[in-house]
Image 1 (cartoon, one colour):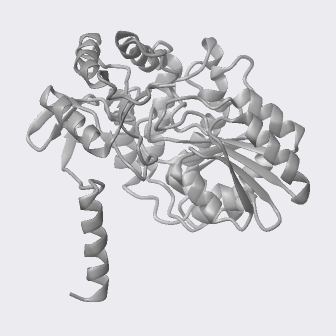
Image 2 (cartoon, rainbow, N blue to C red):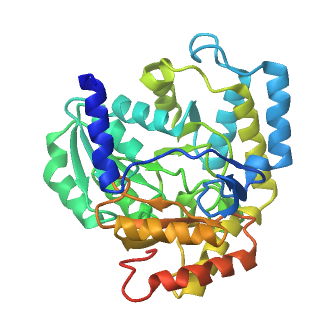
Length: 396
């Protein structure tokens, strides 16, 4: 065995010993709810397809028509020959939906964050980031030569103390947070963070991957994301998100002012040097946004289903469609997931390094079309897992 293979084999053996090795399993989702995994048909509570739009007839038809008309790929970077008119139409629609001046569409959410952050923050600048922000936000900070400070999760006072002590040393400052935290399901205190950032001339950026389509108060805010979960909605100059969750497709975006968007399109490396997304995905995203705007009750159902689940278990009301049940030990969470699969449910175990040591969990993701009776049956199956001190924490 050569040194490269020996290195990889040793790493894998160590992960296997600690129950942390990950393996791919072939599966397919037949209708947005049911998934076939290794010969078993399971009801999935692990998918981020919150509105079940991956299989919506209008979304599929729009994508199929674009595929037939424009072909599979865009052919090049958008700055070369890959800037299909559908992209500009989608950007205009996203900007209007999010209440921003302009938008920039990237090939993926990960590409968006790893392009946006280093474009805005460089040498002589300051980045503050929530300790539980998504991995791609941290990846973006690591690509920047700016000074980085991590603040405690959703701790506005800690962020304030850092800005008071550090802000004056730097040219510009950028604060990064999720709108909805993907592993805990809680919301960022966006109004307080917005006020803090305004006071200290710090640019606030929120990753709304898990808020778009499922959060928002009132008819004008419904489905527009975590910013609109507050009344009044706070000012967030940098609203990032994905097209792969509630929108049901693939891609990422930034909604911001026209100058900021123009800067991204000329300097963000993951935009400049990446092939444009397939036109069919843009067409599907446009159709999905149409569905969200024209079916107002749809965006309310994932959170309502999550709250039905938390109510059945006597937990605090869910803040988003994501509900974690933290079991602590890796062995315990793996056994729990296997037991739920035996009862017909797919609930993926989440292990380190995705979450901190000692906080392995079951992560439940609720969608619009989950049947009420199945949610109640799931709660009955989960209840025993929470007894005898087996649970360390639950949804916030």
